[in-house]
Length: 327
Picture 1 (spheres, rainbow, N blue to C red):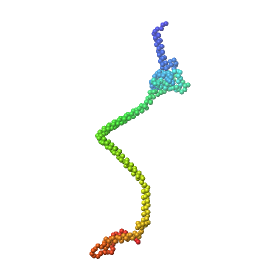
Picture 2 (cartoon, rainbow, N blue to C red):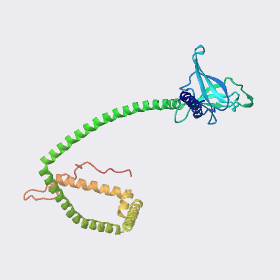
Picture 3 (cartoon, rainbow, N blue to C red):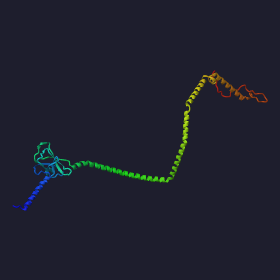
Picture 4 (cartoon, rainbow, N blue to C red):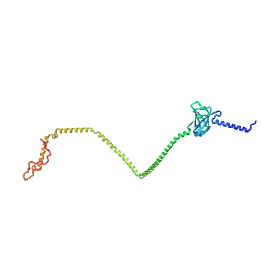
């Protein structure tokens, strides 16, 4: 019996669909020729997880996300159905960790096996849910303090820039004042150029005079040094020795006077000699007084008449300067 073209085309289409189905599941990592177990896990937020995302165990794909359901009666939590190979035995306490899929993005579920391999979870069991901090969340957590510091840094930079602005204004004012000062100094130098030239000439003349004066002072300093050497050469010790000898002789003379040696010593120490000299001086004083009152008694120049001899003696007309001591 001949097969019509329509039957051939239909069979070819069915075969293509079957091949497409199995090929698609094979490319997603599903073993289309082996049976699998179904497990459930609930999350409050799946962060972009979608069906057909892989389920990984130690980096190896062992299943896929089969279905995601919204549970309005449970605060809109999300129930995720996992299709995992039957050869993978999940112990009690196994955790389904929702994590990032790596550099290429996307989400995966990593299985963290329970502690007791002997206690295996049956098919359609509920796994414990856990969420791993994603790359973006980690960046956000790390970027928060950095952004805060960046804000502080920007504020500090703004304050510093304001300070630089004030400093620039001050510097501009200083440069302006310096320019004015330089212009004033230039005017002063221009106005006093002749005086400055004369001042420099006078300074040169003074410098030459100082040089000549230095030449004249050098011999004077040499003579002064010679004089100082001469003074140092004097025998100051001999001069002091002679002075001491003179003082010793003077002491001897004074001692002799005190002991009554010689005429001066006797005059100072002999009371009888002192009284005799005193009496002699008194008599001499009386004689001089009588001579002043009656000079004719001693000198007669009369041609006619007799000599007036006056009184025999006259009283003393001066104050007696010596007093008699007790006999």
